[in-house]
Image (tube, rainbow, N blue to C red; front, top):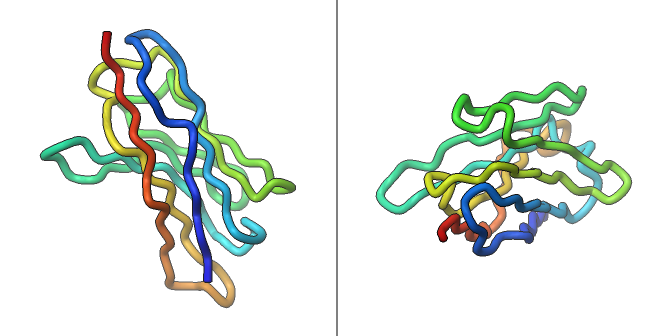
Length: 119
C-alpha cells in the first residue's frame, strides 16, 4: 500500500518562507503525477501545485511566482518551496499522488501538515 507522509508545516510570519516535503513509501515513478493541495477552514480543498512524471508543472494562479514544486526521485520526495507567504496561504496542506501502471485509477493522500501565516 502507498503511504505519503508530509512534513515541514508550521507558523511563519507574513513574507516568510517554508518548505514542505512529501515522502512516498516506494518509488515515485509509480505515479503519473504528484501534487500539493490545501484546505482552509470553511473552504474546499484546492490544488496548489502539481508535477507530472515527465517533469512539467502547474500552479494555482494565487501562488504563481511564489511557490515552487520539485521532486527528488532518489529520495521518493516531492517538495513545495513557499516564499512570500501571505495570511491567506494559511491552510492544511496535503500531498496527493495519482497512480500509474499497476496503481492506475487510484489516488493516494497524505494526512496533511498545517501551515499558519500570521504575525
